[in-house]
Image (cartoon, rainbow, N blue to C red):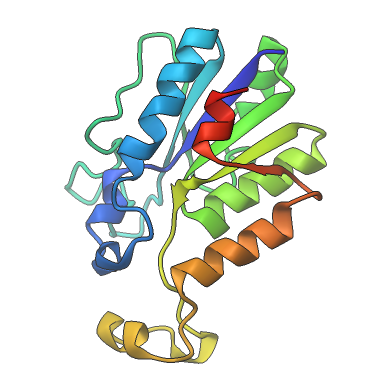
Length: 195
């Protein structure tokens, strides 16, 4: 069965935020690279997804005067590999991803990217609802500590120091609990490469 590897939002925009100093996987590009090579060798589809927030003036705004909506160094799409730009949390709603997968006859997805509990998890949940078989490669995702809802907007140093901040380990664990057996199979990079 042919699969599609989704490379979601592994982009320079994230590296420009103060939160990058606390990212769970600063070497996310190197972690995902073997999965990309494996997918290409198997003849699977590699789908590249970038996130854009037009009109916000921030690091995800394509018109803000900086070139940050691009893949991290070390990740390079090949000619013919689909490149999608989304404006929603999941990779389906504002792109033609479902139509692309249908046209390619793909029913199995391998999810990687940034952020574990946001765009990666949300894409996985939507994919599960659409009937796709999904493998969620947690170690090939990355996330950041999350402030308690009452503390959002505070300086990042204070958020990191707060005992109410959810650690990246807790974010990752909660995502796996929410997805496993419901929306996806959780797998390691090694397990995916050995399939």
